[in-house]
Length: 119
Image (cartoon, rainbow, N blue to C red; front, side, top):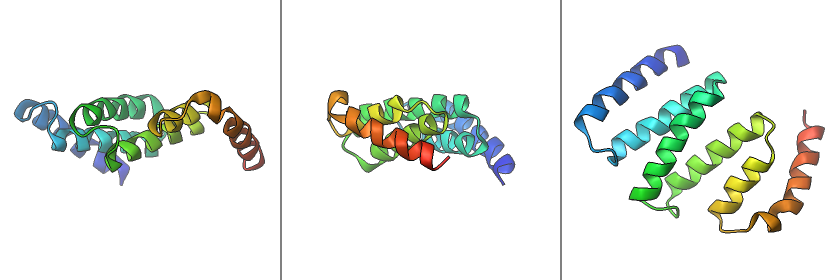
């Protein structure tokens, strides 16, 4: 299923890039979709690239308080979690919810313990 979704989403992305402004919600949603497709396929480098594009576009257009921005931050955190880069998920979540990373360091210990016990 993902092998069919990827080329269609990519094709739509290329068409929309030509037709729409960079901050058009359709293009942003499609970048997020491509990131999700690559995440599901395990291609984290491409997933991060598309999700970061969407993140910057969301930030400019709807701000960081919007649920779509939150979902994007959680998708990025999930990828870094799967890559075992444990400080990055805490960082994305902490930045999104306006906590300092120092306040979240205790959570990192809990996340690390949970990751080890569930691996």
